[in-house]
Image 1 (cartoon, rainbow, N blue to C red):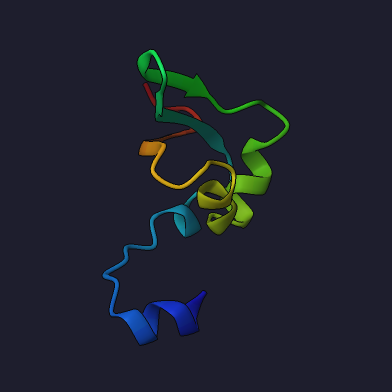
Image 2 (cartoon, rainbow, N blue to C red):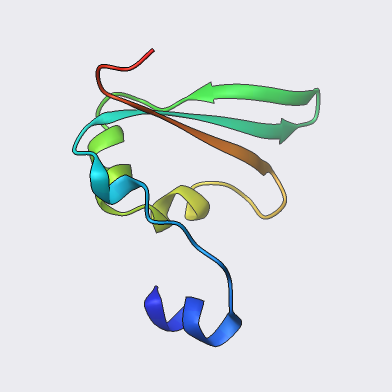
Length: 74
């Protein structure tokens, strides 16, 4: 991942390294419009450890927004 970022110049922020648990929610484009998809409980730890897997879980052009709620926050 570091090599990809360095060669393309994509600006990044490493927020997930501060947290060990939390929930994910995604806004995705579907045939019916925009939909909200909550991350499944068993996937959340994997997504925190491997955030690049968030992008690979959706087809190109469908993922609009990724939200992260740290454990214990509102």
